[in-house]
Length: 304
Image (cartoon, rainbow, N blue to C red; front, top):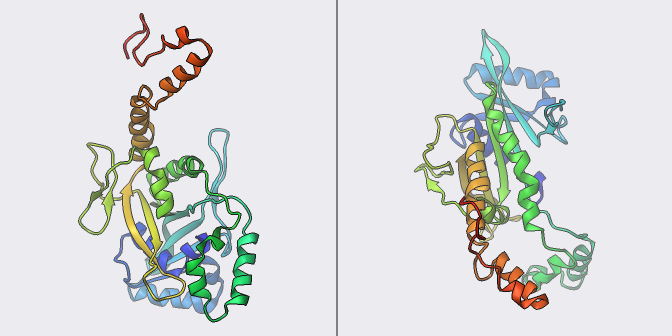
């Protein structure tokens, strides 16, 4: 999934609606910040604001450049995939108001695409009239010499940045952060979060908060899990929301750093666990020594 497509106009509108709290499809004008250099655009912005329309500008890598928080001796530098600012009227004049951050993390596959592309080009040359049917029958062409992702790295590579950026909403000028990920990435995160259950909120969104915590009036962080609607006749298949999850950094930390490790520790002494594996290997070298390794604490070991 190309991150650029995820940040297209349709999805961008959905993310901005989540962050700034207006119904999806409501009147909102969202444009790249660099368009404000045009006199006609500035006049249009003023007219829309006067009519009560919500007005937003954004910056990304290709449209105006990414924005970033510079590093210090006590903090790292971070750049943002998309930074959105709302423009509001104050005393009859446009003013920059709150900002929101949008991040996209897709599945990271290894290897070159050149072999798959060559297969597809050859197939198109051979089957110009029946290429879709041939591709449906021979889907292995799409993965020629493409290595599968390192699932653990998909989570580890994202987790720190995700937690850091989810905290942005503590700043009074920040509307929050949306992290958009495909279903495959969300599914790969499951074990790293202890496979938590999502709680439906009743409005089409879900909650993922630590026990004893409820959704606040202002949601600081959203995880937007998207997929492809393969049954739609449109080409390319449209992106659809599978889950829209309200959460925050402390809750994600609870599931990743408390719940998942507890589950893992409980599995150390299982039949397929680390101690059993170590026992089998050591027994091959020294049977009597291997027999002394059990899941029970060693004599004199303090209780946890």
